Length: 108
Image 1 (cartoon, rainbow, N blue to C red):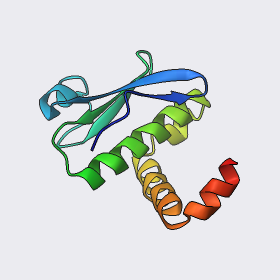
Image 2 (cartoon, one colour; image 1 turned 180 degrees about the horizontal axis):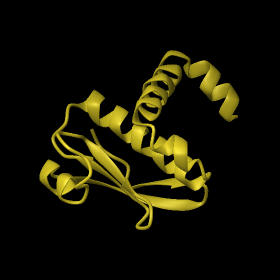
Image 3 (cartoon, one colour; image 1 turned 180 degrees about the vertical axis):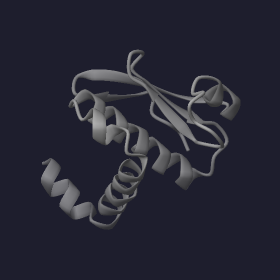
């Protein structure tokens, strides 16, 4: 998947980059096990693990974008709820994928 170079969230440009899984884990000591992305709010960056399957990369990007939106909107408690963020990411992706006409209409 070709990731965008950046994404604009509430007038803040978040840089998007692919990094190794090892690099992701080095900067997130509080997380254990494998994970596929992270969002660095002070640096305004989203990092996605390189070499993932296309569908996994897409859902991970949406997941991290939701984290950034929640952070920028001040929803700190909800932002820490990984199950909620993941559920929203999957639901939002399916909404857009299954309803392209609705999305075009809402965005026009």
